[in-house]
Image 1: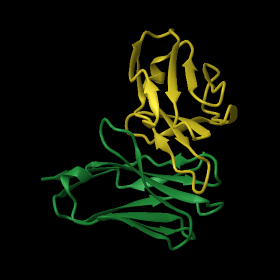
Image 2: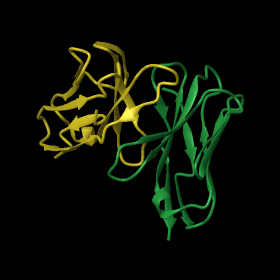
Image 3: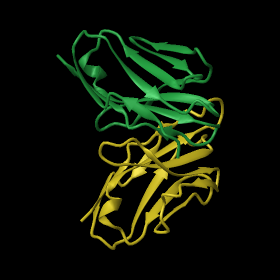
Image 4: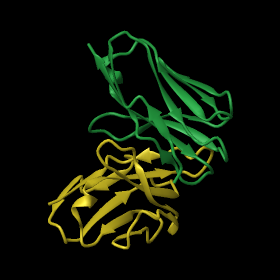
Length: 114
Length: 111
């Protein structure tokens, strides 16, 4: 297992376009998290899954954001009608949901909305 | 949203100096406190997880302490090296669910 993979690493898009990010977690991890990080801030929680169930979604997340984890393995995060304020690093992390729930992060997907 | 605060925001130290940072978190409903190191162009990496008041963890030159009653944790680096340059994040969890991160302390170690 090579850890948590995210794709693409970088995405530049025009305002109003839709973008999708993919995350492949560590295979034996049943928890998967999405965070967003902007300059000067720490990772901001977006949503998390336990297996295929989306258990929590941040109230900060607008209706333009949707995430799925259809078979409890990889996950996608889609942003519709992107806005310049969506420019950020989107981080995915997974955990085994045991003990203290230590997260293993991917390298992130950096989104730039022009 | 739970308020997790870290100080200082950034720090420059000379190689060989020892340093420490602070993480403040809500003292109610505490479950665990995490420390992560985030080097530029890499993924955040877990350093420590602490769950009990008075916990102390150590990994090489880096150690951390936890006070859940007053809601703070300290991270110490002894004899800083250039490879310690990174952003150090703490994260609080009120249950075995979501982690709430602070804004981080950016450490630069000057050779």
